[in-house]
Image (cartoon, rainbow, N blue to C red; front, side, top):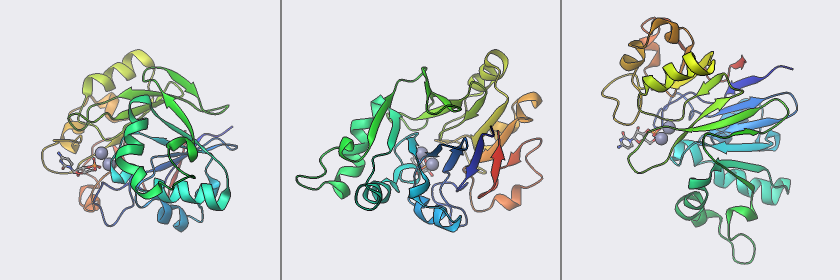
Length: 245
Ligand SMILES: Nc1ccn([C@@H]2O[C@@H]3COP(=O)(O)O[C@H]3[C@H]2O)c(=O)n1
Ligand SMILES: [Zn+2]
Ligand SMILES: [Zn+2]
């Protein structure tokens, strides 16, 4: 069985040359969409895919580049494909997602009054592993991003770290590698400026070499090409490419 991660987008929130940093995690029989930003419908379309191909969606945190495509996903599932897919999301975010993000567009008297009318909602407790499919097990790890906003990175199959948007947390990366057998890190990467709400390339470059060797950079800005060759052992993920895990 091959577990595959396809990046449908690798861009930062306001990038114009790349789609939002969203991905498909597939085990052959099951397809999980990791985050569903504003650009997700077009990104899938350009890869010859659609929401029809998705079995479940997982949300890391509530910013438009991670949830802005959920209105279209929900409407298509309800009225076109007529099925409820699983929505995996931290238990702290379920109500906020509906009240603060989706209700405005999706509410319909007598038809749609809650997330449960659209999805099979699966609230997740951080620190606890969940079997999403026969070959995909995911644990949420709460990581800092924006003050007062909960955000959750992913630990997949006990060896793959997929960061949500997060400020630098080198101790977490070291802990995962040294104590928990982490062998691959997919990490958001702000190319320039101070890392107020994201991890910067400069910060990642300061990681120990043995960690840098397993870091793949994503969620980057339009000027990524200027930085090719300037990321040490770390490699940029490529939009549309499928990575075998
Ligand atoms: N305090 C903040 C809050 C947000 N932002 C920008 O808004 C984007 C929202 O999506 P993101 O991918 O988290 O990246 C955030 C910053 O670019 C920012 O730069 N500073
Ligand atoms: Zn983002
Ligand atoms: Zn964010």
